[in-house]
Image 1: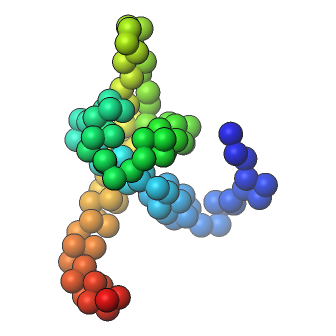
Image 2: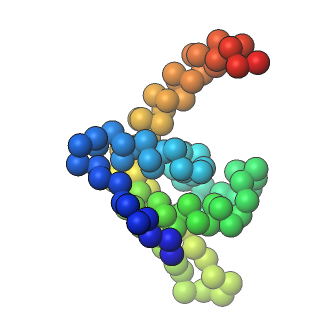
Length: 115
Protein backbone atom coordinates (compact mmCIF):
# COMPACT_ATOMS: atom_id res chain seq x y z
CA UNK A 1 0.00 0.00 0.00
CA UNK A 2 1.23 3.48 -0.90
CA UNK A 3 1.88 5.81 2.06
CA UNK A 4 2.29 9.53 1.41
CA UNK A 5 5.63 10.95 2.48
CA UNK A 6 3.99 14.23 3.44
CA UNK A 7 0.50 13.40 4.74
CA UNK A 8 -2.17 16.09 4.44
CA UNK A 9 -2.72 18.18 7.57
CA UNK A 10 -6.48 18.58 7.87
CA UNK A 11 -6.44 20.53 11.14
CA UNK A 12 -6.57 23.98 9.50
CA UNK A 13 -9.09 23.17 6.74
CA UNK A 14 -11.67 20.49 7.57
CA UNK A 15 -13.48 21.13 4.25
CA UNK A 16 -10.42 19.58 2.60
CA UNK A 17 -11.44 16.19 4.06
CA UNK A 18 -14.73 16.16 2.13
CA UNK A 19 -13.05 17.52 -1.00
CA UNK A 20 -10.35 14.84 -0.89
CA UNK A 21 -12.89 12.04 -0.38
CA UNK A 22 -15.28 13.21 -3.10
CA UNK A 23 -12.64 14.23 -5.63
CA UNK A 24 -10.90 10.85 -5.75
CA UNK A 25 -11.63 8.67 -8.77
CA UNK A 26 -15.24 7.47 -8.78
CA UNK A 27 -15.78 7.92 -5.01
CA UNK A 28 -18.84 10.17 -5.25
CA UNK A 29 -20.44 7.86 -7.81
CA UNK A 30 -19.65 4.77 -5.70
CA UNK A 31 -21.15 6.40 -2.61
CA UNK A 32 -24.32 7.33 -4.53
CA UNK A 33 -24.72 3.85 -6.02
CA UNK A 34 -24.25 2.17 -2.64
CA UNK A 35 -26.77 4.58 -1.08
CA UNK A 36 -29.30 3.36 -3.69
CA UNK A 37 -28.82 -0.23 -2.57
CA UNK A 38 -26.29 -1.41 -5.16
CA UNK A 39 -23.90 -3.12 -2.78
CA UNK A 40 -22.14 -6.00 -4.55
CA UNK A 41 -18.89 -5.29 -6.43
CA UNK A 42 -20.16 -6.90 -9.65
CA UNK A 43 -23.29 -4.69 -9.57
CA UNK A 44 -21.18 -1.60 -8.92
CA UNK A 45 -18.99 -2.55 -11.89
CA UNK A 46 -22.08 -2.84 -14.10
CA UNK A 47 -23.53 0.49 -12.96
CA UNK A 48 -20.18 2.31 -13.33
CA UNK A 49 -19.05 0.44 -16.42
CA UNK A 50 -16.78 3.26 -17.62
CA UNK A 51 -14.46 2.71 -14.64
CA UNK A 52 -11.88 -0.06 -14.69
CA UNK A 53 -12.68 -2.88 -12.25
CA UNK A 54 -9.23 -2.58 -10.66
CA UNK A 55 -9.79 1.12 -9.92
CA UNK A 56 -13.23 0.53 -8.41
CA UNK A 57 -11.81 -2.22 -6.19
CA UNK A 58 -9.03 0.13 -5.04
CA UNK A 59 -11.49 2.95 -4.33
CA UNK A 60 -13.83 0.65 -2.39
CA UNK A 61 -10.88 -0.38 -0.20
CA UNK A 62 -9.88 3.24 0.40
CA UNK A 63 -13.44 4.26 1.26
CA UNK A 64 -13.58 1.36 3.70
CA UNK A 65 -10.30 2.41 5.35
CA UNK A 66 -11.63 5.99 5.64
CA UNK A 67 -14.72 4.75 7.46
CA UNK A 68 -17.13 5.74 4.67
CA UNK A 69 -18.06 2.13 3.84
CA UNK A 70 -18.25 -1.17 5.65
CA UNK A 71 -17.67 -4.47 3.91
CA UNK A 72 -19.50 -7.65 4.78
CA UNK A 73 -18.00 -10.92 3.56
CA UNK A 74 -20.30 -13.94 3.56
CA UNK A 75 -18.70 -17.36 4.20
CA UNK A 76 -20.05 -18.99 1.04
CA UNK A 77 -18.58 -20.24 -2.21
CA UNK A 78 -18.31 -18.42 -4.48
CA UNK A 79 -17.33 -15.60 -2.15
CA UNK A 80 -20.04 -13.00 -1.61
CA UNK A 81 -19.09 -9.44 -0.62
CA UNK A 82 -21.39 -6.50 0.02
CA UNK A 83 -20.66 -2.86 0.86
CA UNK A 84 -22.76 -0.56 3.04
CA UNK A 85 -22.45 3.11 3.92
CA UNK A 86 -21.50 3.92 7.49
CA UNK A 87 -23.20 6.81 9.27
CA UNK A 88 -20.24 8.95 8.18
CA UNK A 89 -20.80 7.85 4.59
CA UNK A 90 -24.54 8.57 4.75
CA UNK A 91 -23.74 12.11 5.92
CA UNK A 92 -21.99 12.70 2.57
CA UNK A 93 -25.20 12.11 0.57
CA UNK A 94 -26.66 15.63 1.09
CA UNK A 95 -23.29 17.12 0.10
CA UNK A 96 -23.19 15.07 -3.10
CA UNK A 97 -26.83 15.98 -3.81
CA UNK A 98 -26.02 19.69 -3.46
CA UNK A 99 -23.04 19.35 -5.78
CA UNK A 100 -25.27 17.52 -8.28
CA UNK A 101 -27.91 20.28 -8.16
CA UNK A 102 -25.32 23.02 -8.55
CA UNK A 103 -23.65 21.25 -11.47
CA UNK A 104 -26.98 20.58 -13.15
CA UNK A 105 -27.98 24.23 -12.79
CA UNK A 106 -24.73 25.56 -14.28
CA UNK A 107 -23.72 22.83 -16.73
CA UNK A 108 -24.95 24.55 -19.92
CA UNK A 109 -23.06 27.75 -19.15
CA UNK A 110 -19.98 25.79 -18.11
CA UNK A 111 -20.04 23.61 -21.24
CA UNK A 112 -20.47 26.68 -23.47
CA UNK A 113 -17.50 28.40 -21.84
CA UNK A 114 -15.08 25.51 -22.26
CA UNK A 115 -16.00 24.54 -25.85
